Image 1 (cartoon, rainbow over the protein chains, first blue to last red):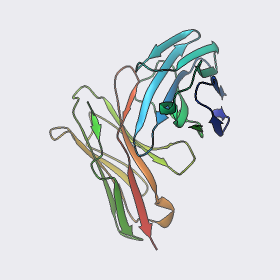
Image 2: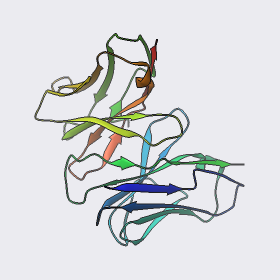
Image 3: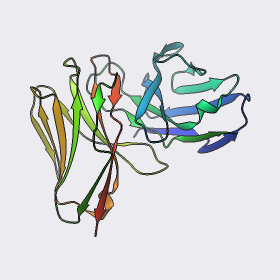
Length: 114
Length: 111
C-alpha cells in the first residue's frame, strides 16, 4: 500500500532563517506531488505541484520554492523565512495521469515563525 | 476569487441526527468533487467523491449530492456520531488534477 511521510511535524524558526521541509511517498511510482498551506482559519491553498522529476509548477507568487530531486521526494524550501510564512504545510500525492482520483495527504508540518 | 466556498464555518448536531454540510462553486469546468475530513494536527483524509455527471454518491453513512444547475454540493452524514467531529473540506477538481478547496466547516457532534 502507498504511504506518505512528511517531516518534521512541528518547526519553530526565526524570521530570516532558511527552511527545508521534506516529503516522501512509498509504494507507488511517478506520482503527482503537491504542497499546500493552510493558514489559520482558512482552507488549503495549493502552493506547488509536480508531475515528474524536476517538473515544478508554482501556483502563487511567494517566498517559497519547491524541488523534486527524486521520483518520490518533494522538498519545500525558503532562503529567508517571513512572518507570513507561518502555517500548516501539507504534502499530498495522487496517481499520475488520472482524473478524478483523490489526493492523499501527509500529516503536515506546523511551522511557526518568530 | 474564491471558486469553492463553504459559507458555514461551523455546525453542531446531536448524535444520531443528520449532519448536512454545504459547498458552493463558481467554475462550471470542475469535473469531480471531493469531501475530506480533517482532525487537528493531521492531514485531511479522503471521504467520498462524485463525478460531475452524477447527482448522488453514497458510501455507508456518507452521501454526497450534486446540483449542477445550482453549482451546489452537500455532504449528508446519517446517523452522526461523536467521532465524526472534525473539519470537513469540500474540493473541486479540474481536468489537470489540481484541487481547489473550500475554507472548511467544523462539525461538532454532541453525545
